[in-house]
Amino acid sequence: MTLHCIPFLVLSTLLANVSIALATSDSIMTFSELPKVFRSGSGEMNADPSPRYLRTQASNSEERVGPVSRVEKLKSLITPSTVSEKTLQRWKDKEKSADTVFVRLGLKTTDKLFDSKQFPVWVEYVDKYGSAINTLTSYFGDRALFKMIIAAQKIPKTQALATQLHTRQLKYWLTNIKNPADVYKLMMLDKAGDKLVENPQFMTWLSYLDDFNAKFRGKAQSRISILSTIYGDEALSTMLLQAMHVRSVADIATKLHSEQIQRLLAAKTSPVTVFKILMLDKAGKNLLDNPMFSTWAKYVDDLNMKTANKKTSLLSALKNHYNKEDLAKMVDAAKKTPGLEKKVERLEIEQTKDIPDELFKRLKLDKAGGHLLDHPGLNTWINFIKGYNKDNPKYQTTLISTMVYHYGDKRVIQILNAAKDVKSTAIIAKRLQTELFQLWLQKRWPPSYTFELMNLDTRGNNLLSSPEVTTWTKYLNLYNTEYPRHKTTLLETIRSVGYSDKRMIQLLDAAKRVPRTEDLATKLHSELVQHWLAMKKSPNSVFVILGLNNAGDNLLRDPRFRAWIQYTDDFTMKFPTENLLMPKTLREYYRGNALAKMVETAKKDPRTEDIAKRVEGQLFSLDYK
Figure 1 (cartoon, one colour):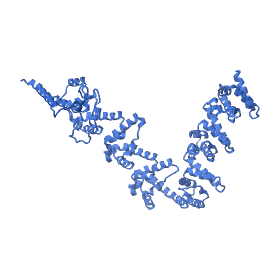
Figure 2 (cartoon, one colour; figure 1 turned 180 degrees about the vertical axis):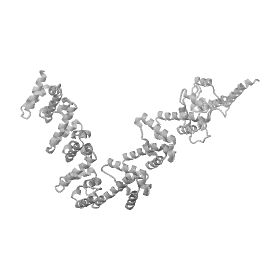
Figure 3 (cartoon, one colour; figure 1 turned 60 degrees about the horizontal axis):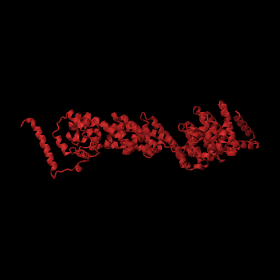
Figure 4 (cartoon, rainbow, N blue to C red; figure 1 turned 120 degrees about the vertical axis):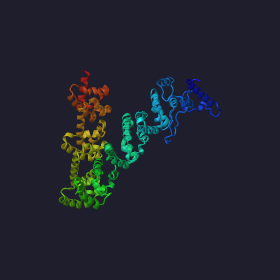
């Protein structure tokens, strides 16, 4: 027998053994018993296998549940270690599935897959008509595959392919809308511990999140929200603070920490809680040296701006961690340390200011509410303040600022408005109101903000009859004088809180029935007319806004009709190309006979005679134009 016949003999023997094995009663495998991925009409393995999630806890040497075929496995024994392009092309022509080729190449679903020389061949083959990542995910599952890819990236000979597959796995997740929070765990970042930010995969995850948010804007998520949910604010802050001292990741850690502070601010987290989150509760005597103290102080200031009615001082928050004596010692010690001057000065101011506040509370003025201005203890406090301000010119305190601190601006307004109606407190209430307005002007609070602060946006049609609106218009005038470049009007403010034109008319109608609000209603009406003219709102539109299209037989007697006539005149004067607007509008909403009848009736009433004659003349001009 010649040597070149030996391979054929071996092949024949192998195939014979396969046939015998399949024929024996203890080795029979029926078609239905084959793994699902191998069942097809022709007996060929499916090209598009259904997902098979694998045991991710398997050891490095354990083979996972992947493609299995006795025939293809035996054929793999005679498959050369280097598969030619011709062979690959033949397989492709025969549409051999990824599973079939995987077995034929002798590959196994173990953690050592990347070590095989045939693996890159298989990846290239599959990618020509499908996706290697899809198939590998069905073999291993997301997490196990990710773990294998990362391990392979650390080995020079498999690094290039692993890096390529790593990128493609991320794209695969993105295509399948994999939630960033789930990807975070698939990448095992939740097991990264305190070195999270230093983990190279952390930056990869941040990039994935950015891509996810850009592609699926309706499902966009905040990275700091995800991290806070996983770790909790305190643990996350600790990790980020530590990472801020590592040069390679200091920038991203600092940025994330700032985002965390803004998230806490949006949630109006208390300064006491944030103090602990920033680990300042562990600073001890070195509190003022800690760089996070400035971050915390700014947080308190920002929160006070956001919650104007419930302010917190640094000192009141610090009292949860330090007693008076320790605070005093800490401030004295800090005076000797260069660079801490501003922090020391601020605490000293708050310590000094604390004295009037303590007396205010001791006299129970903080509980007096609406009876504050006639409380017997108020004169005691005012007399004390006179001496205090004289002795402490740097730390001036006023009654109005103390009231705002303890009651908030909204409650102070209510107290002052009530006190103005009482003879014994009217004078001091008016003076305090002026001082309150000055505080608002210093803060540059726009009239629209103080409008809502005074709850005027909730008054509905009774807005103009509300006593507070008179108070508010005084502030409006002061603001427009102080900041002429930002000048605004009553109308602009009312419109900004959701009043439509029709609702504005209802508001004016209600106000005109009350003598004390008639002037204010007239002013608002004038502003509304000017607004309509500026917007070139047609008389026809205004006719409907005023509800005159439904006025019926009372049209000419309706006070709003006279106002509409005036608007029509103003409109025609400003836009002279428009003419006969009044009769055209009347004809659109009322029939000729009905109009004629209304005119005749109105001509007999001295109160409407003039307007009836004018309407009659306009209608005549239109008919004989």
